[in-house]
Length: 409
Ligand SMILES: *Cc1c(COP(=O)(O)O)cnc(C)c1O
Image (cartoon, rainbow, N blue to C red):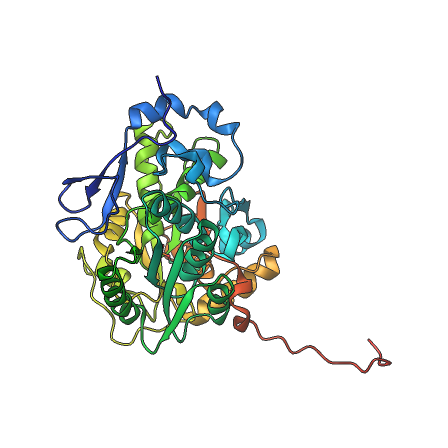
């Protein structure tokens, strides 16, 4: 019998469970909610044995049976995935968490974990006949989708707030995307993009709106972080995973990965407790969790240096809150001062210059240890979602300048 590259079976509405076809270009479900990809996991269990997966190349496509691309020839890759899971012994000792680990996504193409969602999302879009992608972004996602669109030969229309990290503009421009800066927030950019896509598609332009959770496959790319963590820990999950939560795709995706791994018989024992980390300047998920609600309200004046998590209203907020509740996790906000201090301290302790969003997780781990939510015996994984190199302005550098014939003391 023919061995499928993907065991994708259908798409499922995340609110109602209604089935939708997986082999046409899909947006939101009929109920207006995100669609989640479902697989024939019985078949996948036979095909992706632990030994089989272990022998494959070290990128995220090693989990191709549970990814949506059907034809291996349609895989668009720049070598993303299988990032290091680093022990943080000095930082862990300082924070009272001797079993602290960091999944370091600063090493993927484009320097942020958005490359995972882009690789899988762009591959599948191209396979389904999309000719151009269009999206609003806080910077990193647009940069990644622009690069992967170029790699796939697709067009890219990107709109980002003027305040988004400058480097991400350049990433879009250098890879040939059509880029607009918007004097507003990501939600404003989203409205402008949706309108342009509708008008262009009336003329048959073949655009897909690939906004966060408005297409089903970005989640699939990001879920490979969960598969990798379990594989790297020898088939076990850590006790706790902290994730910097903006649109929430990553935490929803890691939760989905863990559920699939249980169904695949690859993960025994309790699920790790998932912690949604936000910045105090924009913490709608943390506020909703504290109030016992299952949906969030946008804060009045959202702002934080951790720009990737400045998302006032996430389409998938209820899925993030489900992930936190279902796993016995929690939601924590830290201040910009705390996360910047954590960014500097981690570089001094461990030589790793991480992004402010990742640093928020390190700061939150310290907070949870102080409050006693963590007792210090747990294995704790913090997600560093990107490289500090994308955020040069978060570090001041003013070394002495010497004359060419000067003197170093
Ligand atoms: C996008 C982004 C996040 C938030 O990711 P979500 O999965 O959308 O919650 C965190 N960190 C960085 C660096 C990002 O670019």
